[in-house]
Figure 1 (cartoon, helix red, strand yellow):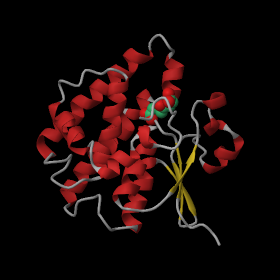
Figure 2 (cartoon, helix red, strand yellow; figure 1 turned 45 degrees about the vertical axis):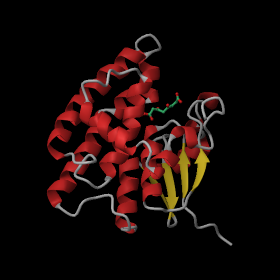
Figure 3 (spheres, rainbow, N blue to C red; figure 1 turned 90 degrees about the vertical axis):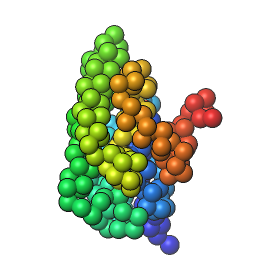
Figure 4 (tube, rainbow, N blue to C red; figure 1 turned 180 degrees about the vertical axis):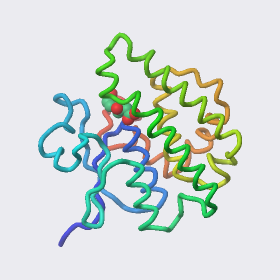
Length: 216
Ligand SMILES: O=C(O)/C=C\C(=O)CC(=O)CC(=O)O
C-alpha cells in the first residue's frame, strides 16, 4: 500500500527545517523525516537526486498530497490552508499582517544572511562576526515590532507562524554567541516556548540525524 504520510527532507540543525517541523507538530500532522546532511561530502543537498526535489539545493522540502513543496514559509502557509485545525494564523487581518511581517524579517532579513552557503563564502575568519552583525541588526527590528504586537507569544496570546520562525532563530543567535540581553521580549517568548511539546520534539537535539555526541 502506498505510504501517504508526508515526507520532510530535513537537517537537524537547519533552522528552516525546524520551522516546518514545529508547524507539523503543532498541527499534529504525522510525517516521516528524510535526513539530508548539509555537510557530509560537501553537502547531500547538492547531489543530482536532491536537486530534482529542490532546485535551490536547500532544506526543507515537503512531499505532501502528491506534491513536492519547497521554501519553509510557503510550506507552512500550505499546511495552514489545507489543514485548518489548530490554526497558526490569527483571524484578524491586521494580526495576520503582523505575523507575516515577523516571519519575513526573520526568513528574508536575518536567516539567509547567516546561512551556511553565505558563511562559507564569507570565510572562517570573519564568519562569526558576520553572523552576529546580521542577527543583532535583525533582532533589533524584531524586538521593536514585538513591543507593540506581542502578548504571551509573538502576536497576541496564540502561537502563530511567527513563533515557529522566532525560536529556531534564537537558537542560531546563541550558536553564534550573540548578546541577547538587549532583547528581553524575544528571550521571554523563547523561554515560554522551550518546553512546549511541539517545540521540544522539533528541536535539533531530538532529530534522528542529530549526532549522538550532541543529542542528550
Ligand atoms: O550544521 C551545520 O553547521 C550546517 C548547517 C546548518 O547549521 C544550517 C544552516 O545553514 C543555518 C540555518 O539553518 O540557519
